[in-house]
Length: 159
Image (cartoon, rainbow, N blue to C red):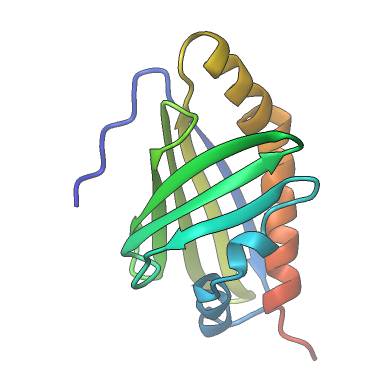
């Protein structure tokens, strides 16, 4: 499986958090078919249309994100990530010119470090303006703040 080269206008956003948990809990949470819904912040509504994943690193997801009355169709292809305990999803159909999201898990002395690294590029014109407003800048930071908070709540080791 070949990952296309990002376009020249692509940029990368990274968020890293260390969570007091185990690698097993982190991977189990991300393997849960409900994880994407749990990681989608309100008021966005996420509806899964078809989940053809055979693992975190192989298969496709088709889903719709509703931003109020505006539906955004998305197909993501799951791929291996940059290390053995990671995976990536590549947008193969959707609103942006390019989107590749790496979910990187690393064991550290305090638990597990979760790094989300998104490389994205926008289309020209009005479609690009819309995706800049929905999927970049402050909205992107809010999305990953929420995702890390929800992940922490799901995987944290108590006691």
